[in-house]
Structures are given as structure tokens and as C-alpha cells.
Length: 292
Ligand SMILES: Cc1cc2nc3c(=O)[nH]c(=O)nc-3n(C[C@H](O)[C@H](O)[C@H](O)COP(=O)(O)OP(=O)(O)OC[C@H]3O[C@@H](n4cnc5c(N)ncnc54)[C@H](O)[C@@H]3O)c2cc1C
Image 1 (tube, rainbow, N blue to C red):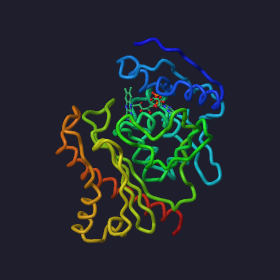
Image 2: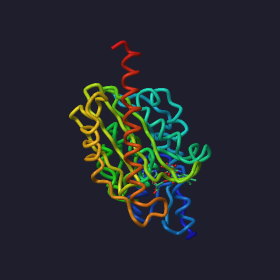
Image 3: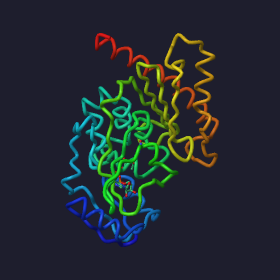
Image 4: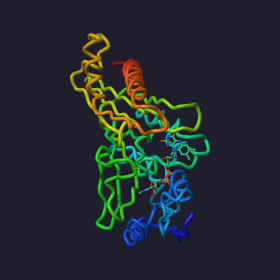
């Protein structure tokens, strides 16, 4: 491991100043579950590590602000998986957070770190894409909101600019309620990144949002607004054709050690149907419970 200096700022402004000053030579440290491995294996060699865990503005408490459910940059997977509002309203995110790594990993790993690491296999990314979440970043030129679909470029690369720090991830509470589900396929039970990770959200107007990862350089979102996919009574061949079209952009790498492209594409279809059925059932159950 190369030597680096360790900074522990106590305000977002100080953290941003450090990141802006050192540019690509600086790395944010949140839970460290990705970064520390990369420091050890030498695939990241910053000269400055900026630990953001002692910044009071990055409050880990999940809170409701102006129609958004705000998840801070220091909120860890355990807290997200346990939060009643997330479980009820953003079920696929709770499910995704609950399968990241192990108990120990989930107690350290932040949602912000999962996104900023930009692994195509990041389990929380598909759920956030289906909910049209926004990433809030502070930078040298002030703050900005980034629609989650505009965050990912390719493995390890995001659209965050020099000096920018993610301060929160926000989920729209005002959008129509959805039934949603997250499913994934791993080589083995326990600690492994997904060979396919997928989330599906269906709303009462029949719009189906499907997002999937680990089958291309970045997680992808596709939307069906015909209402056909969300309708279990529609012809299966018609629904299958739509689903097939939604997977058209999947392009798994032939070089991955985790699973071959054919297997991943086959699993994508299996998981797609499975998540769709669960999301539809959850939407129906939620509407029945609400007396609709
Ligand atoms: C054993 C093991 C099992 C795992 N299993 C899974 C799994 O099943 N599914 C899965 O998706 N992931 C898994 N992971 C990966 C990892 O746990 C997640 O990606 C985690 O959420 C990263 O969060 P962190 O807080 O630890 O980030 P860190 O390691 O601290 O940071 C990750 C990256 O994001 C940047 N970053 C962090 N916070 C910010 C911020 N606020 N603003 C800007 N940049 C920031 C860092 O500079 C770094 O580049 C696993 C990791 C391990 C070690």
C-alpha cells in the first residue's frame, strides 16, 4: 500500500475544499469496504484520503424533507434495510441493501459509496433507477442534483466533477406508489457480487420500470408504458416480446470470471419475470390494503 495522508474534515465545505485541491489524487473514505481493498491491492493510490464520517451535516438518519426521503452519505445498508418507510414504499431498495455482503459489510457500507464506486454489479443501483432517485452533490461551485440515471458512465467512472462530494441520495415520496422487487443471482450464497442484479417497479397506471446491472458497463434503466407488461391477463407472447426488447441493451462481458454472457442473459430473463410477478403482486396487495 502506498503512503497517503489522512484527513478528517468536520464540514462539507472543508471536505469539498480538500477534494478540489487534490483532484484525482484525493479519495473519499466512507465505509471503506471498497476503498480499503483498492488501497491494499494498489488499484487506487491516492495521496490524500478524505474520511467523511465525522461530518455532522452528513447525518446518517433517514428523514423526510419536502416530499423526498433523504438518505445521507453516511447512512449504511443496515439502516436502510431496517427503515420502515424504505421497506414499505421503496421495497426493492430495502431488499437490495439487505443482500449486500455480510452483516459486517452492511454495518459499514454506505449507499453513497455503493453508487460512487460505480460497479456495474452494485446491488442498490437498479432499485434507485426504478424509483428515479436523485443524487445530491456539493462541490466548489455549490450544490447540484443529479438524476441517478445520469450518474453512471462505466465501471468505476461517474459524472461527479472534480471536488464534488455526494451528500445524500433522495427518493421521491410524491410519485405514485409502486409495487417493487429486487432479485439477483450470485455464483454462490454469501459474499459475492451479483452475476445479474435486477429491480422492477410497477405503478397503478401500468408503467413498468425495470433496471438491471452486471450485464454491461453500467446499470441500465428501461421503461414500458404500454401497460401490457404490468397486465398479467395480457397475452404471454406479447409480454415476452416487450420484456425481450427491454433486455436488448444488455451486453455482458465475455471476460468476466463470474459468469459467461449466455448464462447471464438467460438469468436476466428468469429474474425479469420473477421480479415483475412479485412487483405486480405487491402493488395489488398494497392497493387492497389501502382499500382501493
Ligand atoms: C466482502 C464484500 C462483499 C460485498 N458484497 C457486495 C454485494 O453483495 N453487493 C454490492 O453491491 N456491493 C458489495 N460489496 C461492495 C461494497 O460493500 C459496496 O460498494 C459499499 O456500498 C461501498 O460503500 P462504502 O461506504 O464502503 O464506500 P467506500 O469504500 O468508502 O467508497 C467507495 C468509493 O466511493 C467513493 N465515495 C464514497 N462516498 C462518497 C461520497 N459521499 N461522495 C463521493 N464519493 C464517495 C470513494 O472515494 C470510493 O471510490 C462488497 C464488498 C465486500 C468487501
